[in-house]
Length: 162
Image (cartoon, rainbow, N blue to C red; front, side, top):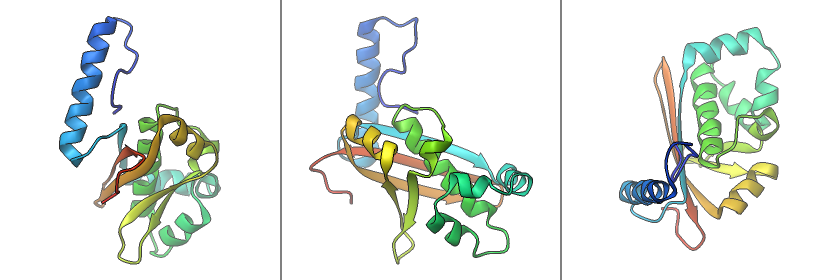
């Protein structure tokens, strides 16, 4: 989901501005501060498990060494991989770019000692966020044995993350 117009070719300019304003207002209501962009994604854990089994190099192409170290701790890290993949997709959706392998490792989910997730963007992903005016990300992750969900919100400079 993107804040603002998504480029639908049937809407007129005035409608796009109204949609963008309404979306920004709704996002502000969700997080209590101005939001530049939001993204969300849902991943089926069984699909991630199957991809990891079918494509042994998938994890190395998509996840950072730190993410792989965390995800590989349990015997079956499919839930952890799935929720991190959802986070990467959510960030790329928020930035309005497609899913490309070269950018996926530039979006990293890192964990605080408390277990709270945060995002670290590098390379092209960081440049895209900078161009969009995003200086801080809010992230929430959740997963069950079957589904993994991520929601991210990009905030402008000068706003505290918490």
